[in-house]
Each structure stands twice: as structure tokens, then as C-alpha cells.
Image (cartoon, rainbow, N blue to C red; front, side, top):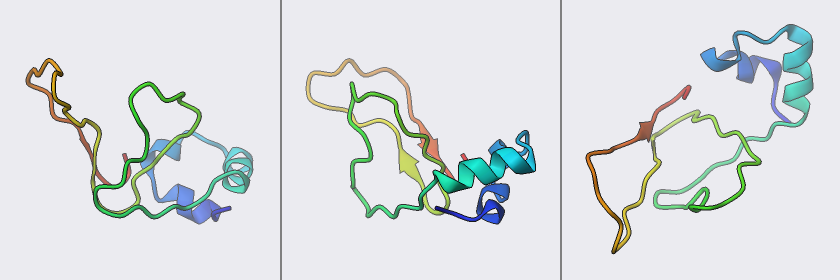
Length: 79
């Protein structure tokens, strides 16, 4: 569980009421990942919402045989 004040630091949650933020805070957890950790894999079911609190996250890993276009996605704090 995190504090409502932790959620309020992120613009994405501005549209939620105090009551909604309180409910969300109860089911939210803070996790720390190390560099090069995989948060999810291609094809995983989307059953979590991740918000970057500190650092950056690369959302794409190019594997041998992938078709490569011009695409680079990075999430930074608050995204």
C-alpha cells in the first residue's frame, strides 16, 4: 500500500477524487527494479499499471529476427 500523497505526485491521477485515490492507494504497491530487469514480457497479460517514480524504463527490447522500424519508447518519472 502507498499513501494518497504518493499518488498525487503524478499528473495521471489528477482526475481522481480523494475517495478514488484512497481506494487506489490501498491496492497499490511500490516496487524497485534494477537496471536491465524485465518488468514484463511480450505477450504477457496486462493486469498491472506501472508508473515510473524515479529513473527511466525502456519499453522495447529488440530481439534477433524482429523487424526493426524507427521506434524508441522511454518512460520517465510520472509516466
